[in-house]
Image (cartoon, rainbow, N blue to C red; front, side):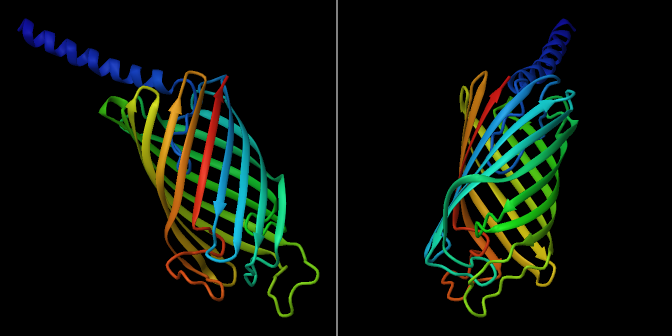
Length: 304
């Protein structure tokens, strides 16, 4: 009997210790283990976090295409379950040797300049460290004045809603996340002078809707270090053309975390895509009009 009581006590202590250990690991902030998919954790009440994202997008199969997008974000924990954020976005672009009707009207090159702003809210329903699975929603409003694809002037207002799931395995050493999202966009392009004869550059406002889903798995192989992989599927529908594009990106991710700061690096390769193509496109298994063949994203976070 005493042996059974001892076993019960050990199981009870183990059940209490695991959530406490997981909470200790995640108590500092909404730590980003991945570059493109997000977890369900939120910031503790009264705490803040400063994020810096840098994304490099390269290669459309022909000519030269290189763009850098940055996002500087400040997040604040209003409660233990609800946080808000504000972001400033910037971009640079270098594209020449490739003209895409309706999308890339001319060569363009400039350094980093402000390109947009974002306001976000995140609410946690179930905590991954305490419940069988973590669950949260994320809602954001974005206003951009530069087109991330062509670099030209383009007013864009979009709203995004995502469902975020997260689960711990192996006492927190293995972490899974899954995302499901929808984004609706209103876009209005500015006119461009001296375009090639017959070039299509519509300036009537457009409505777009995008659906996306993604998942990632990350493993802590030594203290403070995680290695994993993530994948994202996106598809977009536009006013006049219906399904405009779809793509699947996949890549490895490396994450390091200390008490006050963390860093995440992801290499994202487009493995499959379809939809609209440009004239003379060689690779018909990828979408290279609005997407590139690969992306690299570095994310840094500082907790305070």
